[in-house]
Amino acid sequence: RARSTLAPSTMLGLSWLVRKLKGEVSGTKKFAKKCELAFREMDHDGSGTLDKTELHLAVLLVYDRLNAAHRAGGHVYPPTRGQIKAVCDAVAKGADGVLTLDEFMEFMDVLCKDASDGVVLSVLKTFAVLPVFAAGVARAVRRCAKNVDYEMRKTMGLAPAVYAGLARVVVGKLPAPFGDGQRRY
Image (cartoon, rainbow, N blue to C red; front, top):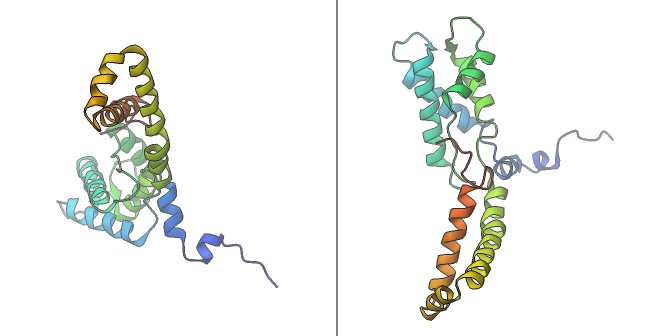
């Protein structure tokens, strides 16, 4: 009896879940449709290719649509001009710097493969990293500013909210993937 070479997640039809957990956004029919639609909308001159300006606009349009549809797993951050240029140079077949539809599809697959943090990382940040930082902030305030902690505790619920807010600010300053420090906006 021959053994299947497919991964168990593929055999069970759960490849979409594995992609979500890993943070992969490319490689699906929906993604390809978004890319093709963006290509057609941004090909203003009807040449069947995208020049550098049209390409940048098409990339931003795809990322905007991904964010509109990408509820679980965080925000999909758009690439910088330098990243777009680097991937374009690697994918473009001709020296003219324009991409055909097929090249654009390959370009977007490369560009968006790991564009999102993924569900696992978002859950880890929400339920592990932030509470640990909030507890650390609370300990530091109690140790260094006892009166502040006492006054906040008199108002029911204020202290935990303040500590959680401060922890979010601290975690936000961390480098990616936990914070927003190295993110491209």
